[in-house]
Length: 244
Length: 244
DNA sequence: CGTACTATTGAAAGCGGTCAAACCATGTGG
DNA sequence: CCACATGGTTTGACCGCTTTCAATAGTACG
Image (tube, rainbow over all chains, first blue to last red; front, top):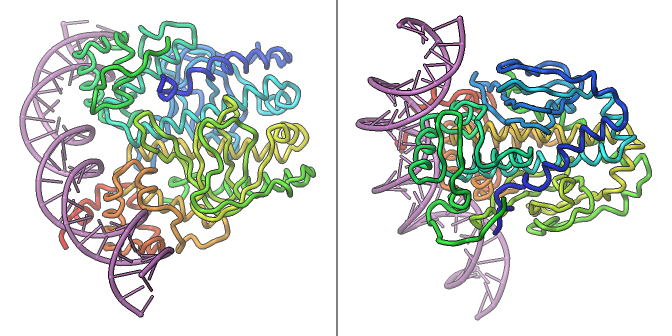
């Protein structure tokens, strides 16, 4: 009923996000030396690279994409501060995704061996790592659900709310923010044509639900946005009041 | 060209699948007592239930689904022997998905506290657990890629090959097997209408790529199936034509 | 100021969904 | 053993959402 059914990220994320790094720090694993800054379009990882450890996004944003057999890139994920990067490498000790930054960003590296040490020595770290991975799995499920059963409008609504949630949990405004990704990226991520993204955004703007100009986005009516998500066909008058 | 670009499951899965349970066993965590058998349509978990631990699928199959805000079920995952169930619960200590068995199956339960103990005490278990979760993340990415950028034919081809892979890694035939899920389940999972699933299967059969009768499926030409997956458009002349 | 990239909007075509009607399998009870 | 009921499956016809194609406009940055 409430906004919970929209996105499970709302509660879990902020907690584990801060936790991981601090938990690691408190164990004196010299994380200070492992900070690194990247700029727009720079790559953190490329598919095929050997796995050395994981990264925690400290600031900025990035996208992960796979180059499919057909040759085209497919964005599978966006990363924001607090997210873990490169976790897919545990499986085969090889990264299967490319990760590229969308803006100037900084990450914190944790070597694989340190991850294992921390998991053993720090309950906090272990808990947070598990939470984070578990949470990602849940988000993936929600995303798959969205991709498989949502209309274009619902997909975009979901995407905007997801972003808003992320910014809110970072302590930033969830109502007004900058899109660090292009329309093409959004379209790619949501599995639709970029023209459709534009059209949906335009339609939302027409309905006074949002206001967009280029990368700058303002959410004018979160409730309607949630309504669109929960049922597009019939705009039931009043469902539930909601969160932030 | 190789099967690698189709599904990353091929290599990783079998290894970690066997490992987890044996690693747990070797540490004498009395897993013998935690075996349980379920029958078709029985539920292992329901959304909202509190998280107690994780399960390893020993035999049979199951589906995970979320009930969306719109009220309809959405299948996010199918489980086969070796898969971990209920991992999404680490995040909030609550399960967000329902898991229901598709046939008579047996699972092995590992209490949360035991998971943590095992992670600390057994490098094998820790490695396998990480691999498994990491692998699931990768599979999710592939699935999202499929959902967002594949045609109906490609989705079904992907699904069949995924199943074949799973059966192969279980030591069973990857060419001939029984579908434990209904067409409706498949359609739901792949984000398409069940009628479309039927149509695609029929078209594949017409092309002599597969042979299906009810739940019984035989793969006649894996190569063409992979070709369909990697590029559909070239076949457009003969595929969707309704000439009969 | 031009070049390249990004974004927007329109018109036409097609894939896939919805609706509808059979068809088939399995199991139940007469 | 058959009639019936139920749920799963199949196929056809029609329609609409999205994509594709195409052209234009706005933006960033040298």
